[in-house]
Amino acid sequence: MNSVRTVDLAAPAEHEPCRRDLPTQGIGGLVLGGDYQGLGIARSLGRRGVPVCVIDDEYSIARYSRYVTRSFRVPDLHDEQKTIDVILEFGRRLGLKGWVLYPTRDETVAAISRYRDILSEFFRVPTPAWNTVRMLWDKRNTYNLASELDIPAPRTTVFQKSHDLHLANCSFPVALKPAIKEHFFYATKAKAWRADDREELVDRFQQASDVLPSDEIMIQDVVPGDGSHQFAYCAFWKEGKPVASMVVQRSRQHPPEFGRASTFVQSVEIPEQRLNCWRSVSYVPSTTTVWWRWSSNSIRAITNISCWTLTQGLGVTIPSEPRLA
Image (cartoon, rainbow, N blue to C red; front, side, top):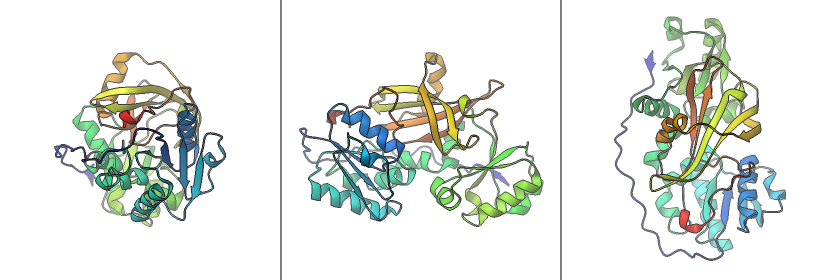
């Protein structure tokens, strides 16, 4: 048994890749993924007259939006190399030089961050480089970062073997969550599993071990409260300052306890001082969304951080000027 592994937070400073001169006229958004996130981005940009192209590997709702100029379906956006090849191929074929890339999935964010230097020669890439994204991509790193910044988070433990669970000092119920989302989500269609006692914990751990390495299985305290106790601070950061931001409350989600998607979200006002600690963890040169939960007994805890854009169906528009990216 061990707590979340230690990582080196003193990563080298990210350098901004040397970009060729990119056009400033007729610039649009290339949205990767056409679910409700992609639809929200398309609406936000399209309402301001910004052309939008959507690429997806599924039947997506965004392709039917009046604000989408062009849409294409491709075989695979899960494989990293295939994703980069698709982005570059469509960029050159459609003449999208200088357009802004908007990923909507964790794995797409990771692919773009790793190939950021190459992509930045042709596109505008708000996604941070891997030195930053790796802290959010692997949630073991995320919770270590929260600890370093003294931000409250659920108690999280990683076990190497299932028989170690019998020695665990757990306060049930607990949640079994993947450290890397895609390794678990596409196999189980679940964000997390709940265990109400030790026997169920062992069973769930063994099931999870069938689809991902055991050291990627996180055992985490369940923060009381449903989706209505969950909030998010989303901001577009540039030079250490939020250029545009909003706070939302997830009033409904599906499934109700460990929501894979929001079914009703509304913007809310939260006192400035309450946002300070969450802003500290959002301090990256990109669009970042920090989710946290205020439990029914007033305990607040960070639950997730992502580097893709929160859906913009709330009357709050995302930055669309090329200079912001």
